[in-house]
Length: 402
Image (cartoon, rainbow, N blue to C red; front, top):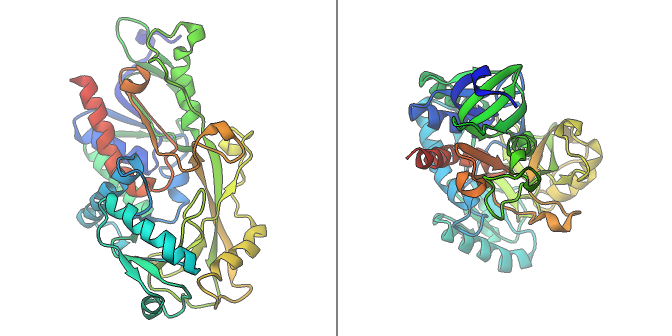
């Protein structure tokens, strides 16, 4: 084990600089903490945060209302719009139409979605008839839908750069090309967490694991001493370390046809995702996705996953898109990019947990390690929720210090 005297002292280390890590770093640096951001890549936001739909979600789908996803999405949406206005981050509050593509969805699914959203505090949804949808979006075929006026799109890269700027203005330091290679809990009189990162040895009072696709590997290194076999004296009874599974989401872009939409168009949600939806980015281009392509659960290293969009999914994309836009022409969907979502359940592993599991945000009250906050399974609506999650993590650590 690394000794405290051999390590560089750091008050707070944030592992990972996607949207979540940057939001946490901003909140902690603004609270007066000496904050170091550790990023394995050569730049911020190159993982899941750069491979998504860039949607500001309203908070419609998530349940129960006290879940992290429901609470932080609704709160984070408000914080994000304010942050973008205050910092000049490009965004567009374009609204979304969730369409029913058959009568059963209109009669059963849409009312349930409206009720769920209302329970979450989202009170601005409007039920639309098929005629209403056609008026708003003449190219969309549906049996009706729901209009969400508070949904929008954001330039996620500009958003992340603005958060980094805030954190650095409060003294935070960014270290790129600095992967975390090891971690352990100090058993000496000076309690803390020892990290090996980028060839450095760091003794940290606080560590927040926002490692994205690698977060479970990092957590297992740091929490290894909680194993019963090692006599983990700080183990909280019943605490179980968790692993992440992976789901690939492919995106296709529209070419050779003018964008037919003025709003985001979403189908009724499917298992594991929100369905192949249509998104208009800030440049006016239209893309469709993501789908849900589950990765073999035996793959535990996300670097083994092919990030190229799968061209063999084109037939399924045409089929899904034509459910609400029959006017799409053959040959006009082109593979664009793909992203990987960290999941806390997998359909092939019955005991793994729900495919719609909540975010996992574990603090000392969960695992017993003072100063350590562990975030796993931060998928959609993680981008929208990021600023709210940052404030929540700060509150956890403030309570530990009090």
